[in-house]
Image (cartoon, rainbow, N blue to C red; front, side):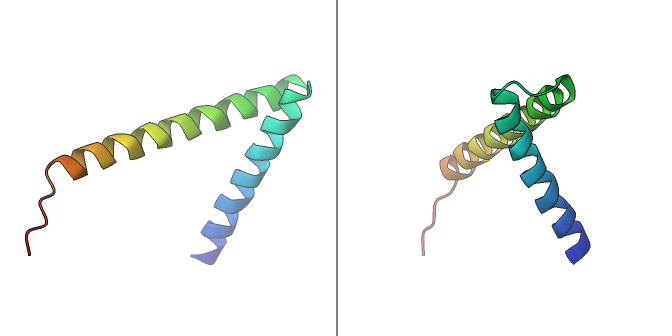
Length: 63
């Protein structure tokens, strides 16, 4: 389990490094990795936004 977490963290750090490098004009593969990283980030944000909206609309916490 910790190996999977370590790999996910390494992928996130690597993706962020590629985004920074691509901003400074890195090679083509860096720009591709940066685009994929930004696309995944956008997808995760939109998923979180939609789940927050749907969760809060029907959530009536009457204790």
